[in-house]
Length: 130
Image (cartoon, rainbow, N blue to C red; front, top):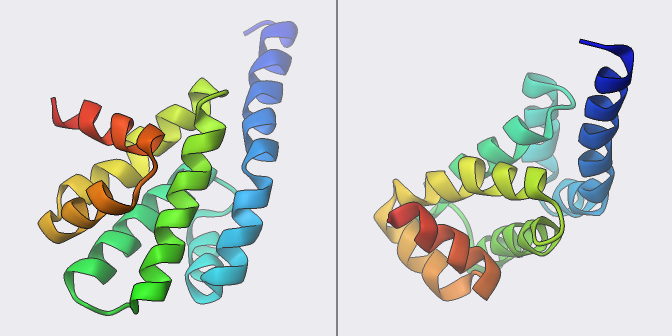
């Protein structure tokens, strides 16, 4: 890979990371135990962080381990990502192939997602169903 191509690729991924910075802070504030554990396991990789978050949210809904307030904050995270994804294809890919895919695998989580996700996120979710 040429140095210029490598520089563009790394700046594109860091740009997506900077776009997710406020969402990362929200996630860290509202889900501190999850965030600390996930960062320990996956490091600075936002794709795996949000994929794990989708798994975490879906399992929490399916097993009734989370309060409705905590579940609503989880959907707030996904809605915030969806807003950023409207302007950034790499964030859209992260949202669709990460947390939204995990919601599809869990019937109760999917039903709740259809009620609580923003119209942008619901569009991506419905696109996965087709």
